[in-house]
Length: 223
Image 1 (spheres, rainbow, N blue to C red):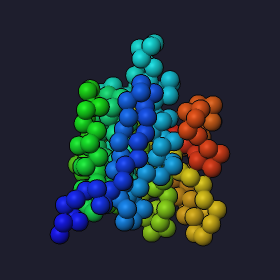
Image 2 (image 1 turned 90 degrees about the vertical axis):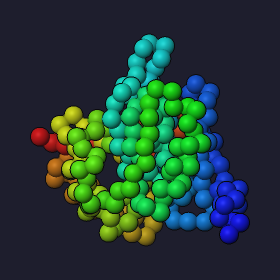
Image 3 (image 1 turned 45 degrees about the vertical axis):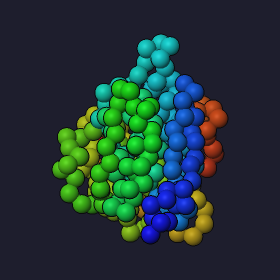
Image 4 (image 1 turned 90 degrees about the horizontal axis):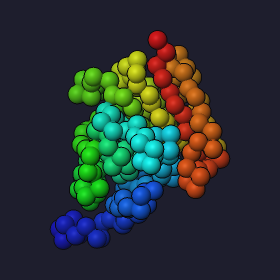
């Protein structure tokens, strides 16, 4: 039982430096499923949230202050925690077996949450979404296009979560192997029935944390 209580044997830490010099410390699991580590797309999206179009203290810009945000497929919670450190009221969500890791990372980074807040909740895509309504201002998702069987429930969840003012910011790494191209294609085919997508050019992303293989989209429900 000692191994279960000794966090050092289960977790290793990834540090993500914010533009203000403070550091988000994200615990990752040595053993576990895809949600247990910080993926590159999560870093790209987290750093995008603090680009000047969203957050520029020198000119008084802070899009995130007081905004209600839901992150889907949060995994370690990096993206949601970044939004919370910038002032958003965030709910990070994932399956039951990732709640311990999410809560650990919220606790680990509590000192950086001066104006925003973050809460972890269980959400399986396609299940009842009433606990996450009214519709948030933003829905964040990084590298959620992974399993074929999850695509239909994911899009259904996005439909329920999206109000007329909701902006979904989706970041994903384009993968060319195995079923990945098919999964991505299926997602976008379903999405375009109800949503419009705008791809964000690299010059609007963080200059250091971007990649040709990693795409950021703004997705909105068509009225």
